[in-house]
Structures are given as C-alpha cells and as structure tokens.
Image (cartoon, rainbow, N blue to C red; front, side, top):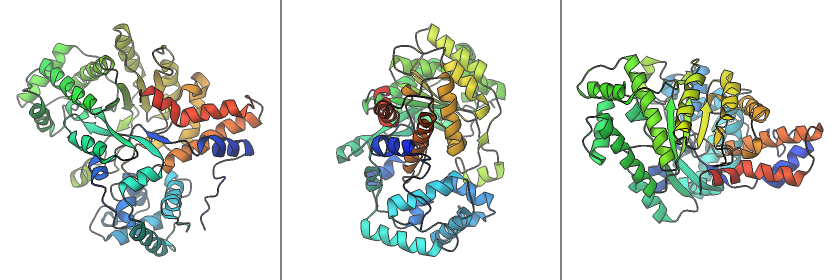
Length: 462
C-alpha cells in the first residue's frame, strides 16, 4: 500500500484542520502551464499510462538519466511499457526527490492505484492503471475537470493559432483555457531559426524591417490574444538585461534581417529593449506580466541537437539580475507603465534580494501588485516551497500571495497544488501551535482560501 496517508506533510493537528476545512476543496486556478491546447480541444482518450504519465515530461526524464537509464528507454525507441518500467525502477529509490511524492500521489488520485512505485511493482501498476484507463475513458477533459480546475492559462508564442481557444470555448467544458502571450521567440534574436519566427509573425501582421514595425506587429498580436480572453503574458530570460536605446535595438534587428551574425553583446541590447517595450505594452493593455529568470538553457549541445529544446538539459544560472531588474522596474514606474508583475526566480541565492526589491514598487492598483512567484522548476519541491514561504513572510505579505501553479506539460500535475497547500497549512499550523501567530482559525482559514484560489482570481481580473 502507498505511504501517502491523509495526513501526508501535515505535521500537526492545526495543519490538518487548515488543510481539510479550508484548503482541500478550493478550486484550482492554473495561471501558468505548458499544456498543449490542441490536445485539450481534441480530447482523445489516452491509450496507456505511459502516454498520459511519461510522454513529454522532462522532469521524469531527468530523474531517469540521473539513475543511468539508457536514453532509448527515456526518449528513444523502446516500447511504452519498457519506458514505464524503467521509470518505476528509477523512482523506487529516489527518496526525497519531489517526483517520489508527486508520482505516488498521481497514481492514487487519478487511477486509484495505491501500490508503491518501484521495480517489483512496475508490471502490476502498468496492468492496473491501463485497466482503469480502458474502463474509464481517461481524457484531457476528464483529468482537468476531475482536478477541480476552473481556469488554465497556457503559454503561447505570438504567432500561435488562436482559433483553438475559440473552439475549446465552444465545447462548453467546465473550465476555461486562455492563452498567455509570450514573445520569447521574437526576443531571442540570436536563435538559429529567428528569421523563420519573424516570418511567422509577418504572415499574421505585416512586413517587419525595423523596430517600429516589430513593435506594431507585437501589439497587433497582443490585441488578437486579448480578443480570446488573454489576461497574462510571459517573459523568460536567463538574465534581466539593461534597458538599451531604441535606435540600438533597431540597428541589431536590421543587421539580423540582412543576414549578419548576432554577437552576444547585440543580443543583450535587443533583449534589454524588447523586454522594456513589452512590459510597457502589457501595462497599456492591463495584462499581468510573469517574468521568469535564472535558467541557464541548453547546457548539453549534443542532446540539444538530438532532442531539441525543453528535453531536460537546463539548469540554474549564477547571473545576478537584481540591479538591472531594479532599473527596469524604476524606469517603467517613472513612466507610469509598470504592469502587474509576478517575478519567478530560479536561483535561491537571490530570494531575499528580490523580496526586498518587490516592496519598493507596490501600489494600491492591486493587492500585491508585484508578486514573488511560487517556487519554480528546480525549486518546486518541499524544501524550495518552505524556503519560499519563509522569504515571502519575512519581508512581504503572505495574505496577498497569488499561490501555486503547475508550470507543467503534464495533465497529471494538478496534485502539485495540493502538495503546496499541505506545506502551506503545515507552515501556518506550526506557527499557530508555537504561539507565534493568531489561533483564530476562521481568519487564518480565509487567508488559506485566498492563497489557494481567490487572490489569483482577483489578480487576473477573472
């Protein structure tokens, strides 16, 4: 039987009461994920547990690589069953890894399977879960609705097809799927396929031969996103770059269009200006910005060439962005163009610096206008979540926090919200039992509900 019990991660009676009375049944608002909207629209039943559990999940792939599993049984030509058994074998001794918890919870919540995941049980789990899938017609819609999700913000490039979202709305699902606007492929001017991406944007807007024309095209696409309900945007950079001059960005763009190679310095000039422009644009149209930084991408060039982007070969950058971030926020604020901003940081060494900076730019425009986003990616684990809550409460205001998200390509990731909720309730419950905060559970419970769901609803003007 599974070691996951009702009081899992709930270390005292107050934590249990907070979780079961206030947190557990709150809906889920997934305001940042990478779910494929086309898959949600098509809503095809899954064929086996591998397809829904392992395909495309680079979190699980990394764990298998750390255990020495051959790539053929991760992303290669091995059968679905062989890959599934290899994952169960690797997971069985991955004590302390968040996947050790998440995967066990996913089996229990979605398939009613309580066998502990390890090499000995892999075959039985495969058979039990596949039997459940056959009997219950497990689909994207059933998984999302069964998880009590009300809103899903996918992450979409500026040239993505927006008709998919209109078609999903026509389906009348019990949840909404809304695109978040992401211009990374237009910002990353040094990328191998940049001119191809620029061409895709031109097809949807107009000819782009200058920075003015690029700005106009980006605003046209943002308006198209807004027409299908967009409330959020996303920017992902390794480092926050200094705000450069518009004419310098124009020079870099024109040089690139002419076929010239882009230097590292010119890449940073372009990204620094475009980040500033985009955030001004988001403020103008009242779109919240989700800023992710601190990821060092594509470390393994051999595997990048073999498997492509987002396959498990990124890591944590040691670059310090705090000064540049301060100057960017100050300039936008001085111009009356600082949007609602959720800052996601991947380097825990910068937690305190970011939290202190956030407090310099709050306003009554929104409760918690500038947010310290939840523990993200490599910090999305028990230790990272606990540290995030400590840093958030030390210099911020937990009552304004917009809560958890999945940041996942997997439809089975929603138990991560409850994983966070249990940690949150233990954090507050422990403070209560130590006599360090109010014991008014009705008051504390209302804050828990807000963090779980209500604050995000208000923040994104749903």
